[in-house]
Image (cartoon, rainbow, N blue to C red):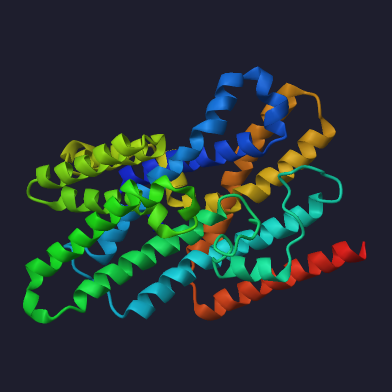
Length: 372
């Protein structure tokens, strides 16, 4: 999760670039503004449609890096009770997520009667609302209420898997020694990354579970340990073997990007001149609030798409400007969510109130649709 001020401008800049790529990808993917504007820049639209989504790999690697820094900087668990750690993470992730989903459900209900397009989610039913509120929608195979919400569920799964692995090592007899416990914790991450990169990630049937994505996440963890080690050569060699075998077995551009991101991260975090770089200010700010922008941008893009494509259905230039407007408004909305919700210290009662609000709003929307 982002902090009020950036202590690592390099990481925030990377998150800012990745966030911008994801928003642009969704604008190109969901249309219809992008369909109308496509003749103006067909190559750019094709790239955004096909490749910009791979920026998710940057978030996965950075997520693993930050998880290792907070959970096990030396390879051994540095956190309290497992339940408390997971509960805190769940609340911090889900409060802004549920608020953004509530906005999206209302925005979808607003445009659905007059904007007939596949990008508009259908009326949510009760089961769909509940599974979204609990981050179980992908597992339950329910239609997503917003673009990219699968990532929030996967992020929590990855964090949970990491916490359980380090806690499991901590539960071993104390006689194994601190150094050996650290080695076991790090070995568990390497083994998990290998299983993901060489096996699970090659089968799309696993893409609703953390094991599908743990390869990139684990590479991020290794990048953190490599950046802190007296010599990085050993960790770099392990990462190189994992990446080379994975790509030899089944070349996946997204895995290549995760591998390169992890290696660049090791180099950057071990280079004093790079660490002293203050980043690109607008991207640093975007990186700090990237989670909130990621959560709410679909609702904004949906509204702008509905208005612009309805009023100017055949003007490429107006629709191209509409895409720029939607991108800008998504950042403004993300800043609101970041300052009003994400930065506030969340609590379980706050989470329960917002979850109840989401379910209630969804039920009212469905009842209104049935009545109409």
